[in-house]
Structure formats: C-alpha cells, structure tokens
Amino acid sequence: MSEKSTKVNFNAIRPFGPTILQGQLPKEIIKILDDEATKLLEVDALAKEWDHSMHLAGNVKQEVRYPPDFLNSSEFSPVLNALQIIVQQYISIPPASDTIAVKDVGTMSISSMWIVSQFAGDFNPIHVHDGELSGVIYTRIPKDLKEEYKKEDHFPCVGDIHFMCGQAAKFSGHNFQATPKVGDIFLFPSWLSHGVYPFRTPNQERRSMSFNIDLKRKP
Image (cartoon, rainbow, N blue to C red):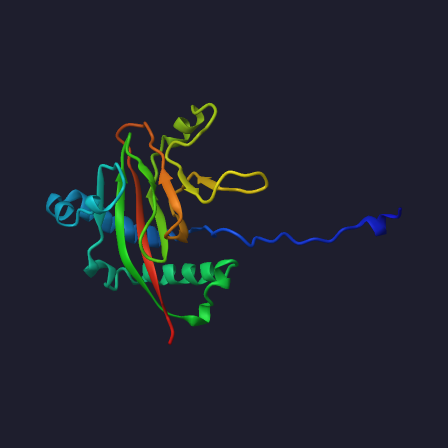
C-alpha cells in the first residue's frame, strides 16, 4: 500500500463542555485593582463596611466587596474596558459562540466584584457563582509558593485553582488545575464548579479578585 493511500486527514472537534479562557492582564490593570484592594483591606472601618464573607463559600481571612462607586468610577474604566474585550473573545470561541453571538450582546455589566485575601491555611471549597460569566484575577502570589510546591511529592496543588465538570470517564476530561501567576485572569461560566487549595507558607498573602458578569442581549 502506498504512502499516499494511507494518509488520513482529520480535525479535532470539541462539541461538549464549557470553555475556560486564561489570559494575562497588563500591570496597569493589576495595579488599579490591587491599590484599591489595599485601601479597603487596611482600613478597618472600610473592611467592615464592605465585608463580603457571609455571601461567599470561602474559608478565608478576608473577603471584601468593591464599592459600587469604585466600579462606576473613571479610575475603574480601564479595567472595565479590558474585561469587555476578554468577554468578547470568550463568546467568540466555540462552543460558547454557538450559544450567543458577539453581535447579539448589547451591554455587559459587573453584578459583583470582590477581593479574596488568603493566608496560610485559607481555602475555597468547591462552589459555583451567580451571573452568566465569572472570573478571577490574581494580583499577589506568595513569593515562596514555588518552593512549597516542589515539596508536594505526588499531587502538587498548593495554592492552585481547580475546575471540575462532569464525571471521570475514559477519553474524556472532567477537571482542570492551574497554578496562577500575578496578572493571570480566568474567565468561565458561572455554573462551573471550582475551588482553591490552601498553602502553608506563613505571613504571605495570595490576593485575587473574583467577579460575576451579566450580558444583556440586544432586542
């Protein structure tokens, strides 16, 4: 049989399951979010006023919601613009693009956005979010986390985020685990189950911002 007659052409298709978009945000965007977070976390009165922990699943030292005034400010505008671009990218990728077209989206609104300030032993159990799309942005990662990660001998996971969907089965994936870096953003459907593993390094903070997004369709 000739080489030509045994050649097989194929395409890989992905008709099932949700998409997770992973990207890297500019330092300027990270600074805007982190600076405002520092103001809220370091002033006791503000941390108490905007405490969001009772609405969340996390076993975390501090979880504080960004005030609406900040989300509607000119200072936040570059962040909003970046998120709009990322959402447009997300819904242009199959299979998300099979459920809604970019041209059909009128406006995007952030229904909630909050800061997750984690220290040694803190973790987020498996949970889901409200809204249509959800995301997480990382502004601080413990500098010694890499060394701690190396000590995990058979299932390294300290500080990782873990997504799960469906069941374990041959020829099919049902989980995705990632080690975040400063500037990373993950965007995913709000119903997608996910959780965050704890780390042990003392006196170092892992800081992230989570958010929920609603899309308004054009008439």
